[in-house]
Image 1 (tube, rainbow, N blue to C red):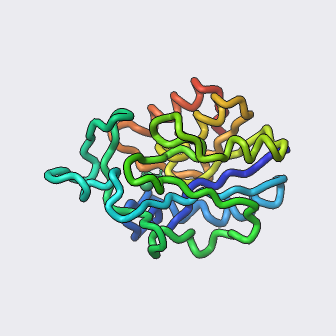
Image 2: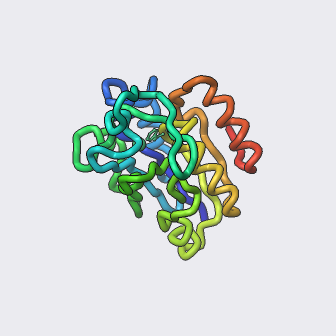
Length: 197
Ligand code: VGL
Ligand code: ZN
């Protein structure tokens, strides 16, 4: 059984959004076209409370894209984005959401970011997606979405480590690419055992 995992195709990650990924909107129709071939379609939604600890605005003297040390490791500070219930947190209006069996929200814990669809950034606190997939008998995942070097990357690495067969469709993903983060992400995904196509 195979699932399509669509990561964070939300307004704030599209051109004009608070944390825009270049060409983030260009992948939407291709993702819609892919949905029909899967046993399950799962969407993720970055979903932060206002004042979230991953926002630069929550740290005095810090700017977006600065790095800070948190208990769980190094964290990039972002512009305020994907605030629960805001227009920027909504899915791109052309994304077909009716086909989704599950929408998994992440980043709701104020003290910790969550790039991965499986674990918060401490790499320990689960979102529940692993159990959902296993209890449905799903063993193969195709991943697409935003951003290729952050949330798609962390999700693909965790999925491969958890034993899923993982394929990442780079043509249906787009990257932020901060300081070589795309090449590092591609390398990490391959090392973890995900297939990049
Ligand atoms: C993401 C940065 C912050 C992503 C989410 O979806 O890749 N990146 N929050
Ligand atoms: Zn976020």
